[in-house]
Length: 266
Ligand SMILES: NC(=O)c1ccc[n+]([C@@H]2O[C@H](COP(=O)([O-])OP(=O)(O)OC[C@H]3O[C@@H](n4cnc5c(N)ncnc54)[C@H](OP(=O)(O)O)[C@@H]3O)[C@@H](O)[C@H]2O)c1
Picture 1 (tube, rainbow, N blue to C red):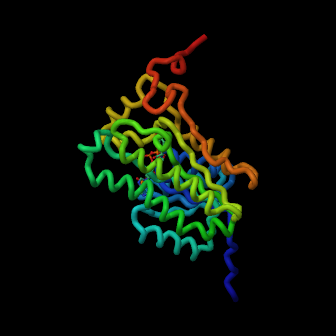
Picture 2 (picture 1 turned 45 degrees about the vertical axis):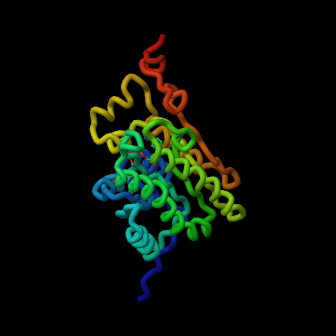
Picture 3 (picture 1 turned 135 degrees about the horizontal axis):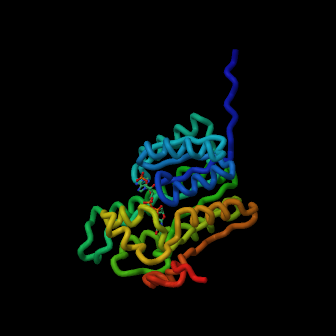
């Protein structure tokens, strides 16, 4: 007897860097709304746990895959596995990203600089380029994780800021290239979010905790809810960019410590 053909589902969301922080929170928020998910990152053991959580939250299908966005072979492998399994991606959340170091550029480590550019810019471009044919076919959505560091620069942020300025340029230019295809492009630009970001950047938990001391940063859930809102808009509405600061951060480099938002005011 002929094997029944697996029916393609065209409503999948692929998230890069789903193993932590904003990517993980976005996976859970989308799962609770019934989206099918492709969860990717380098730490697959974390993805396995997240996959079970997403099922419990209501995701009909969850596929996990190891993908270092710096590695083109990893990307090709993910794409070929998706094809084999008839998984057609409609929405891409380009979330994988990192900062390394906070010193001046003249003292920076060139391997750190390469990693930021290769992950935040080239990784995002490579994933997007590979997935765009499916996304166009499905009249889907590209959501990029930019940053307020892509709007304003700060000391010690030469390379990280450059990568996030690039994400903003890529998002704006992609919107032009994709006009008429029905594909939406959104650039999410958060201020300070308490995730593993500062630990990865500074390499030390104590230093990372100090970044958020005596102020109320955004949580990964805050950003996940914003992403959910953007992708849930009707097809004719494109939220092109969303800048989200914690109340205690007036702008890049302007953080209030001990302010009213962390006090139990009557
Ligand atoms: N936290 C903030 O204050 C903040 C503010 C503005 C924008 N952002 C942006 O938000 C995004 C998510 O950051 P986060 O705050 O959620 O930090 P996080 O908790 O450190 O999460 C970063 C995620 O990126 C993944 N990743 C890093 N390098 C990767 C690579 N080469 N290939 C695949 N995945 C990779 C990590 O997974 P694996 O290590 O398992 O691969 C992890 O899941 C980043 O693009 C960041 O620049 C963060």
